[in-house]
Structures are given as C-alpha cells and as structure tokens.
Amino acid sequence: MVARARGSASRAPAPRQATSSRPRLTKYRACAIIIDGVRFASKREAQRWQELCQLQAAGRIADLRRQVRFVFPIKTDTGRNVAYIADFTYTQDGRFVVEDSKGFETDVSRLKRALMRYFHHIDVRLTGLRRPKDRP
Image (cartoon, rainbow, N blue to C red; front, side, top):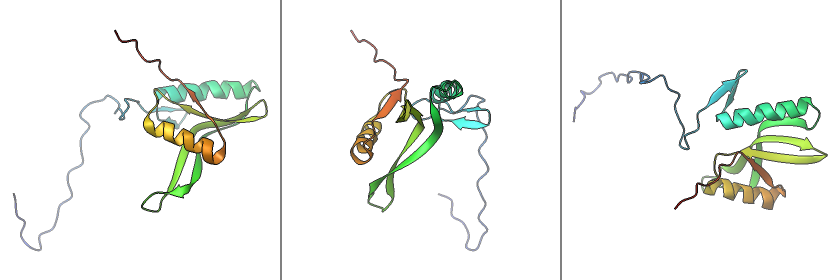
C-alpha cells in the first residue's frame, strides 16, 4: 500500500487505451452499430429499423418511432420510476404496435412485458428471437 503525504495534489488516472480495434460487446454479446448517424444497440435492431422504414415508405405502417419510453405507476426502493423503453412503435392497420428486437428473452424482458400488459394493456411484439438449439 502506498501512502500519500498530506496536502499532496491528487493526480487523475491516465486515460485507458483501447486494447483492440474490435467493437466492444455488451453483456449479451450485442455489438452496437451506427447507421445514418443513428446508434442502435445491436445489428438485429438496426436491421429491423431498416425493414420498418421500408414498410413505412410503402405505406403499410405509419407513425414509426424508436426508443419510446413507457412509465409504470410504481417506484423502486430509491424512488425512481420503473419504465420500459420499447425499440419501436408504429401503427399498422389502425392498431398501435409496440415492438422489441431481442436475440433471446431474459427474465427482465418477461417481467417488463408483463408490466406493459397489466398497466398499459399492450402486448409487446418480440422480433428476432433465436430458436433454442436442440440438445441431445
């Protein structure tokens, strides 16, 4: 352990150097991507956005939005609002659609979808789910 003398100026740590040129992966191995200046959390989400933009241009959906926040009327222990941020929302055939692009479902995503159903009466549509591999 190194002791510092009283009154000595503290030095800021040196900035970290990137160790590789590969993009940093998240907890679930998603790689963020930027398309047309817009940052997406994963390639799957970016691809779905492009598909939805084409559907909107063709007139099959309307009012396309991304990263829409839905707040629940409950709070955490620290007093913060509990919220769900949907990847996409749009209207299709007069119906409001909330969509989330996922590689696979997590316990938190199941819980937040249940909260959306209970508090907002909205079923969240999941897209891009991988099928579980068959195990011998």
